[in-house]
Structure formats: C-alpha cells, structure tokens
Amino acid sequence: MRIGIMGLGRIGAFHAETLAGLDGVDSLVSPTRWLHEHRPVRLDEVRK
Image (cartoon, rainbow, N blue to C red; front, side, top):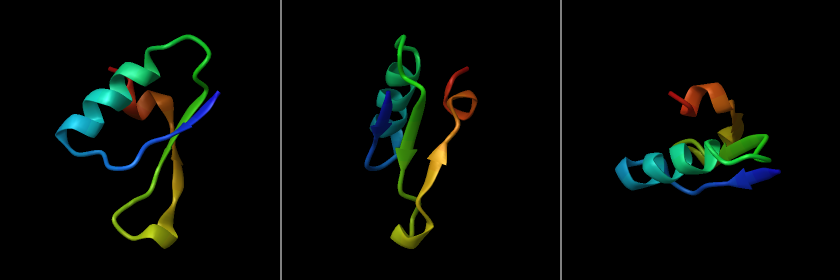
C-alpha cells in the first residue's frame, strides 16, 4: 500500500513512523517544501 502524508513536522513525523510500522505499507509519499519536488519517502528513512 502507498500512503500520502502532508507535512512531516513533529506530528507528521510521528504519524509517518506509525504508518511505516504497519504491515502492508510499502511506501509513504510526502511533498517536500516545494510541491514540484514530490518524491517517495523510502520506508527505511522513516523506520528507526
């Protein structure tokens, strides 16, 4: 499953970590500061 997240501030980062830990989640996608730079976030970037 691919999930989109808006914002990776303190709360968004918490949600990203929670989602990354779920079975079946293959990737998280979040826009960077500039919307034209959308890129997939690798799960190993989020998982600790």
